[in-house]
Image (cartoon, rainbow, N blue to C red; front, side):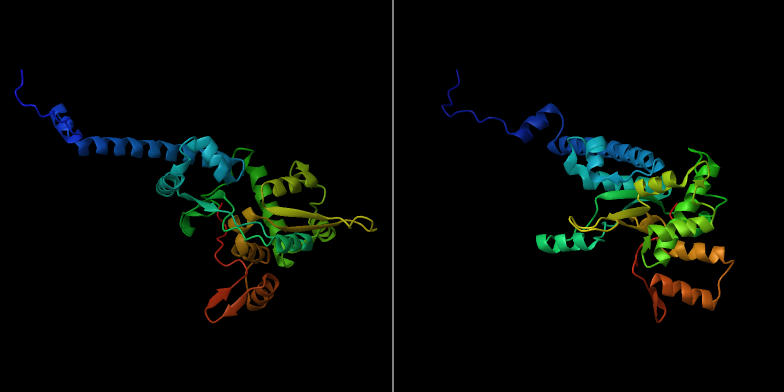
Length: 289
C-alpha cells in the first residue's frame, strides 16, 4: 500500500511518446510527410486531368478540378495547383493559364451590369494548357499537329480557326455574319472545310472557345431581322493573341514592310509609344499550341 496520499498525475503526451520510443516531433513529421505525399498524388491526378481536357479543347474549370481531382480536399486547391504547375513546367513543358473573363458585348448586357451594379470578375475560373518551350522549339517541324483526329484534319482546323479569328480581330473585334460568309466564299471555304461542312466547323470553333456568335433579336413588338455578329473567344485571346494574327498576315503576304506594318497595326488598334508597343490585349501570349 502506498503511503503517499497525493493523487498520481497522469503522464503527459511527451512522457508517453518518450516511453513509447519516439518523440512528438517525429509523429508530426510523419503526418506532414503523409500530407505531402497526398498532395503530390493529387497534383499528378490534376496533370492527367488537364492533359485529357486539352486533347478535346475542353476548358479546365476550377469546379471540375475540385470534383474530379480534390474530392473532399477542396481546401488543398492552391497547394495542389502549384505542385501541378511545377510538374507541368519541368516535365511536360506546359503550364495552366487562366482564360480571360468574357466581356459584355451587347448593349443589353452592359445595361444589365450597370443596373445590378455588379463587380467585375477577377478571374474566369477556367484554364487551358499552354506551352512554355522557348520559341526555337515551337516550329512546325517540332510541334506537329495532333494525330488524334488525323494530322491533316487537325492542321486544317487550326488554319481555319486562326483565319477566322484573324478576320474578326482585323475588323475591330466584331464581324458581321454576312461579311464572314463573303470572306469564306472568296477562300472557297463557304461550303466545306476539309471533310465536314463549314457550318459544322464554325460551331466547333464556337464550342471550343475560339469565337463567340452573338445573335441579337429585335425587341418584342418591333419588326426587324435578327443581327448576327462574330467576336473573338477567350481561348483565341490566350492561344493566338494579336501576335499570332500579325504573324499570319505576314505569312500570307510573304514578308513584311513598313507599309504593311502600319496598316496591320492600324487595323488591330496597336499604338507605338517610343520603343514599347501598346495594344488592347497587352499581356496575352500567342501561338501557344
